[in-house]
Figure (cartoon, each protein chain N blue to C red):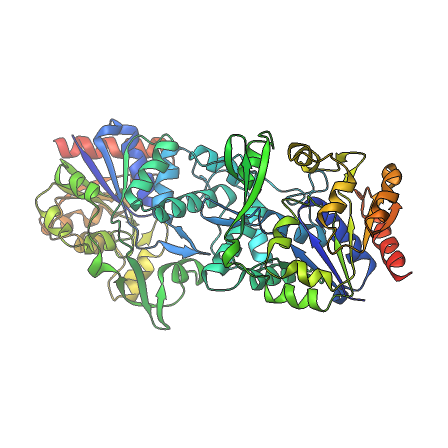
Length: 307
Length: 307
């Protein structure tokens, strides 16, 4: 059974890690959002790609979910001394990733090829692909004007009220060939518990992706439990966009192609409403902080889909 | 009295530091070799510039002479994991310098402007200028063929026998405007105890520099004591080029514009031969490992020139 996980940052990485523990590596592909990529002192930083890569390599910082365990901060401190911007925290080992990626991209490799090389070096055996080789940049339209995603997310701590989103570069971007091939061959597509607007939204916005998903078995795991996001601003964004923050709102985002939806026990009362949308609900524990919980949820989803 | 020091790497940095301790910062300019600059994973590394800058900022690693005291190696270790080249050892804080410099250069600043910004941030008050804003790259012609300088110096540990040197980019390069202005206004030019071929040689090879020096008071400090280089391959290079490795050979390199030459007491016997070339000799202690010895030598040179 060939599984494709659509993933954003930390939640996506944890769900991908669950499937990496539950299936053979050759049966797993993770397609990762690149809408929150950005240039940092001339280097391309891909936070979601790296979070998934570090998590599957077993070197992610378990406290933060992002960055590398035991990383140091010498370069960032020095950059600050030089007057560089330090609001985005990049550790020394993490910096090597951005230096080497930027170096390989400047040699003419595609982001997909670079990602494959980095993953191989770190011993990651499942396939991780950026959603696109062309740059797509999420712009958050806020009450204070447009903000590039990381300015909104990290620098401003998700403070400004959100009005809408747009994606710079989307007209010129295509699903990467590797990601497309994986989706076309997928027996099951799992949308990870990631932010539906800024993590999964960019992937769905690429031409042809929604159509591809309509032809496949697609299940999503809710990033919202009891009206709260497990991590990040999903619930706050829903509220600001005039939607009640609830797992149901997430299911609604994916309604046109969704076959199954996984909710937390705390949201069991929403299951009938999911069913009423023509989507099969699975109610279970969806908090997957530790690795064993991740594997357990992945296995449970696989049994449920098979049944 | 306006002093200009022509400097290469560690020896040049130590002599520059001596003058920085002996004169007012506004009276000191250091013009630094950039022939050993190179691209490292897409970043511009300027080893001599940085050694002078870190030394004058008081953050140089006193054991090695290069790099930053107490630096860590997380990025280099990670780069090695990715398959990057790690024979040139760049610490994490040091890496920030190369990232930020490359970032500013890509924004269109000249290397001189970037260097001034980095120096200001580190509290260096004397002026440090690269010899040129245009790239000049030292190629060492060896018995094994041509080698870019750092390949010869670091990767091969100066092992291959040297036949000659050439400088890529020299035809398009000029003395930087700031360096030219400093030389034109100099009351005294001091050639630091740096390698005459690969540290001072590139500076002298720039159009007009030898002519400028002929009109000024120029003294050089020998990098050779008792036939041995204090650091680096100067003596080995001299022997391979068919010259007896001695302080006298260094004086000969600078003969056409040199007014004074500073030798170690161990080479006192060479003083008459220096004088016979029409160059005034100063015999003293020229080992300047520690800061007090550096200041003492600078003060001694200033008194000697004034007399």
